[in-house]
Length: 304
Ligand code: PSU
Ligand code: MN
Image (tube, rainbow, N blue to C red; front, side, top):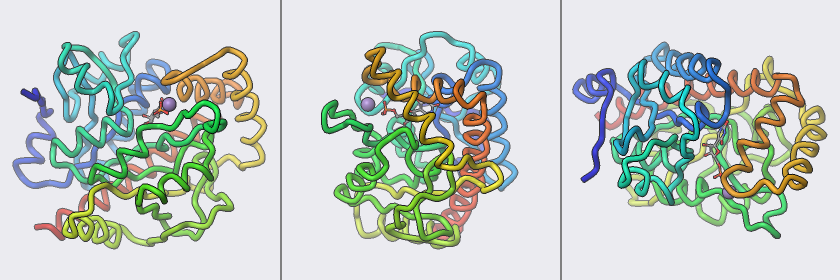
């Protein structure tokens, strides 16, 4: 049996039909040091609340799937050591063995579907890693978008990836990639790339409508909303390019593999930019939380 635990806040939202926004927890355990990780997680939740929706941060704690974390649970997770990073492949195993783990984009989408939540805000999705033609390293996040009916608001895919290959795979999988308010896709820390947006939408109502249309049509899978980082907080692509290259060559030299790749690269980029990458990352996650809340509100109006 799936043991799901709803936080009191999420429980109340479910009872009253208030709009909910799912949030991931890998960003807390594999992205930032304590205590900044807990502060950022709270700040992102507050953005969702301020925009009129209820945040549901997902995590597996002692085998139970938590939908929304109480303050003390968030603090414990943010301080915990050796927390597993859970994706589609290991979510059920962690729950079956009574383990504790943080949810990636893929696992958060699965948890959101189980909880009946249609909208999820994060920083950037995983995707096709550079050199994937050798390593075959492609995030399970892409397959999840093709299968699970959740609209994911992100600043595109993380720019440590091969973005061109990531967009190609999403196209192959039939995932709608929708740029919010501009004609090119964003590049995570930078608001614009040169890649034309496959789809563009300029308001939350349209995004909600497209999501519900897919559900009605019986199309599996979700939508990726590529929401550019606010220009005031962005880092220019030409500044990021050499930093990413350095981090990638260090990962290669140190033989970093598998699940460890993304956290390693983000951690090194944080150090190499003296924290600037994290400042931009925090700003873009908050920006995504605000848009996700507006989409969730539109969706609850439309499906009511
Ligand atoms: N943010 C971080 N560190 C991470 C991630 C996000 O600061 O590790 C996660 C996201 O949860 C995303 C995942 O879903 O990286 C992709 O990792 P992989 O390429 O191993 O699937
Ligand atoms: Mn991988």
